[in-house]
Figure 1: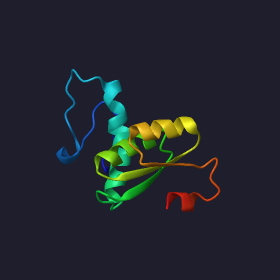
Figure 2: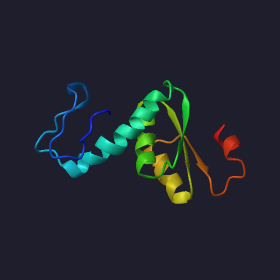
Figure 3: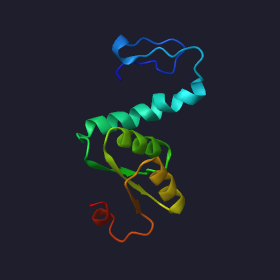
Length: 114
């Protein structure tokens, strides 16, 4: 976004890029969507992927990555989760990843993603 002041008590912004948050809304609950969520959503939209396409998500078991997996799935994409360890595999599969590549054990990550 192109307007300074997003961390101020008051800020100026174009109406097209703002949304009213209801007073009864828990800000702690929605803040990840307003920051990390917008970051990964835009990345997915700008990727050019269309429903049915596969998309590799590096760090899929982390904060940004876990949102990206869920968004990708909701957008009709097939998320390929890339992360390390069995706990991350379990999490990303639960969130909707269609495949998982463990970077700590693979000998050819590119081939595994393909």
